[in-house]
Image (cartoon, rainbow, N blue to C red; front, side, top):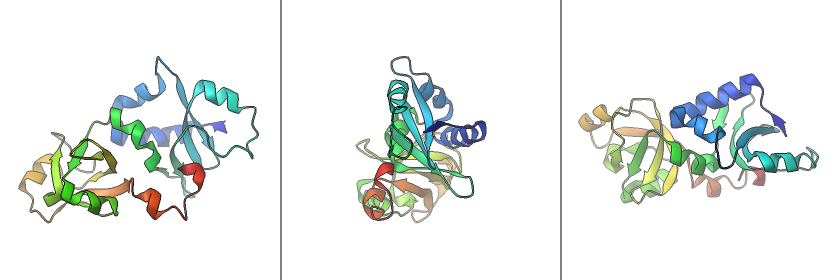
Amino acid sequence: MRPLTEEETKLIFEKLAKFIGRGIKDLIDRPDDPHCFRLQKDRVYYVREDLMRHATAVSRDSLASLGTCLGKFTHHGNFHLHISCLDILVPHARYKVWVRPSSEMSFLYGNHILKAGLGRMTEHTPQNQGVLVLSMRDVPLGFGMTARSTLDCRKSAPEDIVVLHQADIGMYLRDEDHTPASAL
């Protein structure tokens, strides 16, 4: 497990900024419990600093996972958020979308959110913005990218796509054969 390079940190912060904006500072500078980002193989983990210091006694080959998996770097050098970071993103999210109960299962099966399934949306959400998807009972379901702004959603037809699916909590079940246990 090693610290991130400057380029890796930049890619992660750009991706996180799409969802939580300036809340990135709150992730790192926590007065109660300082955290840091660490890379193990191609996965990035959000780890408490005291736990990270204890983990230095374990060899890299023996260490499977530590902290919460934020995402992974692809072979092309892009960073993709993993669904396990959902609990970290929710308290800091700028833009949120609430889904009607009739459309929750559709989203959890990997489908985009249509206007007909949209319960409500944070005011002034721009197009192509990262949003967290919640049920009407404020249960985090996943995250995606807005296909339309808040103003465009009001004028759109019920069958128009409003949020493009990126990840959801149903991925644990769909990808359990392909996802290593260390990412969960």
